[in-house]
Image (cartoon, rainbow, N blue to C red; front, top):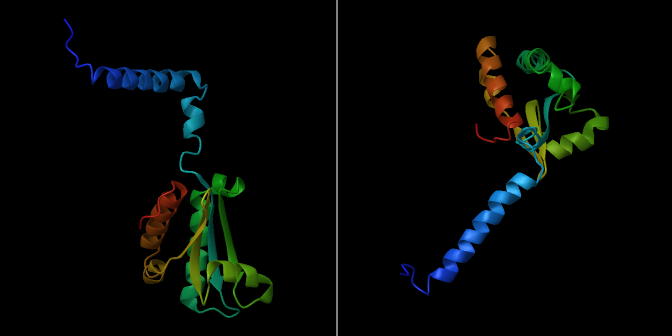
Length: 156
């Protein structure tokens, strides 16, 4: 007895062959789980730049100090491997003009740049300005944000 319609039979055969090719192709590709997960986010690096004027205000200085402390404390390996880059950049100094243009800096700011296969994604983080009065809150917020960026997530 033939339970499959003659019109459907070629489609079932093609679908079965495709599944077999995909199934066996995965196993003979030679890619291990460790290789596929080693940098699954696709993020090459995350830059955290504290842009400041020649004479910054207390809050601006605090943002830079807290951000630097956080990066050094929680990401020492990433700093060493250049997965995270941190720097204080005087946006008024002409030698920094290219970086200022690249990030679209217009004043004191904490900028985050994520470099991946699609290019450089820059963002100004304004929320840190409202968290300088509570260092623990500032640190928790910025750490959570950097963890997301390192994982390839652009959500807030």
